[in-house]
Image (tube, rainbow, N blue to C red; front, side):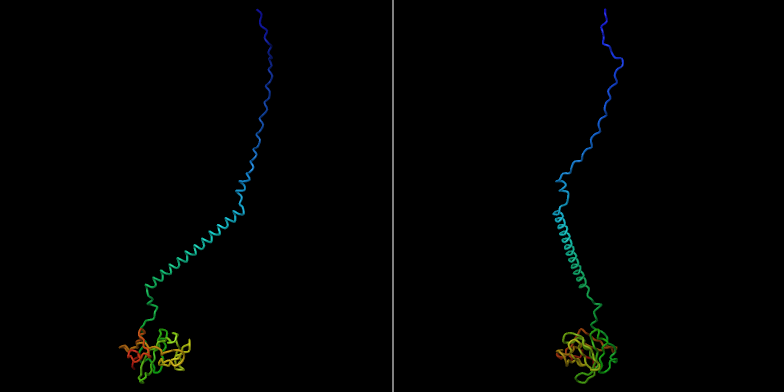
Length: 219
């Protein structure tokens, strides 16, 4: 039986075709920014003006608000301090209503002792209308507008520097606008011979109060 004819095979097969390497990917091109988004992000002049105005309003409001609260706080603090001060009277700084002026023998006749002028009194040894030797205390307040006169030893008178009112050594007004004499304070002699002046009590000549025995001390 005859063998079938088979196609001849190439004993040397052809080499496989070379495969080309893959091409590198193209770089991604960044997307262009959207114009609307860019416009929204970028500050405009209107936005700047609105922002600046709002900042200014807030600053002014804040400053005035702070000033108002500071003023209110200080006012309330002043009221509290005034109330506390009212509850504690200034007893220590006010001059006493009564004081000792020294032994009665220390006062010379027809002389004004002005060492108590700072506490509002002059101590005088002189004569009354009946010629009696007395010691009395005059207020240093002018009866015109409340100024403090000065004692002029060379002229033997009290002279007010404010409006020119003049008073004799007795306290009688004789020149200037003063409408009435100086006032006397209550005065007495203590058991140890000290002259004691009480400023809480006053005596006016025009009311004939200088005749009161408490308005003078007999020597």
